[in-house]
Length: 291
Ligand SMILES: C[S@@+](CC[C@H](N)C(=O)[O-])C[C@H]1O[C@@H](n2cnc3c(N)ncnc32)[C@H](O)[C@@H]1O
Image 1 (tube, rainbow, N blue to C red):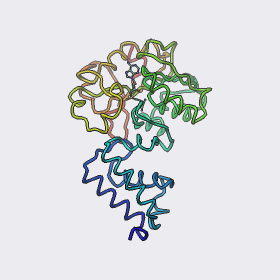
Image 2 (image 1 turned 30 degrees about the horizontal axis):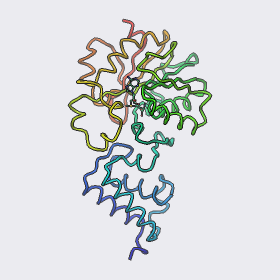
Image 3 (image 1 turned 120 degrees about the vertical axis):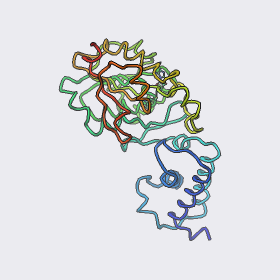
């Protein structure tokens, strides 16, 4: 009888459905169980970070139907869960998302939060650029982590900037984050102490094999030429001109370390440890770029 079903049993059933449908993860969760928890708690309007508090609670027929419906939607559309809920969390901070932007999951959020770039920053760090801001999440997290800085957040996509605006307003940061539309650094003025950039970097071969969940995201947010380095090549040619003398660039390159090293064989960089390894986010000083 559905009225005696416990929430944890419903979640396990829905996780099995997700597994059997072979949906792909990586947009906020890494397993069928975690994805089922997220969608079930969201559908039931419960806090999504406290399953323990409600795991053994009985589920009403209406809630069961709502949970089954969102899981069906996830399976049939193969859209990332965040596009169904219009919400994603990064470092515990909620962001509005829709199909105009990729689902926020940048590893740069980790290196902001764990302080691993702090040794390159100082009291003179006052200007931060979030290049390729998309949903605006890194600009927001940087503004929260460094309360004395002002942030410029830029993107080529007008549609993405509209979503970034929603997130900046959501976190009441409009006075500290300025949005600009720019192709790379083209419309960016002045020098920065810290440039954060999670650019498009997926190589053409990998793009051709992406699961539907990733294809639901804007192509221009992922693809960057045959070796994934088109955007990065242009950026590294121009970045020094937009960094202060002691400035640094923190750049995400995902699984493209081989392509990065092949494209820039003589560039000294610091690889920053992340939960996905120490080969996905790097730091380059202005000094290194000027060599
Ligand atoms: C991987 S997404 C990163 C979004 C966000 N920073 C994050 O970490 O979730 C890359 C972003 O780069 C933007 N983009 C692509 N080509 C660009 C270009 N030539 N100039 C500026 N932004 C660009 C896309 O619109 C997309 O929002």
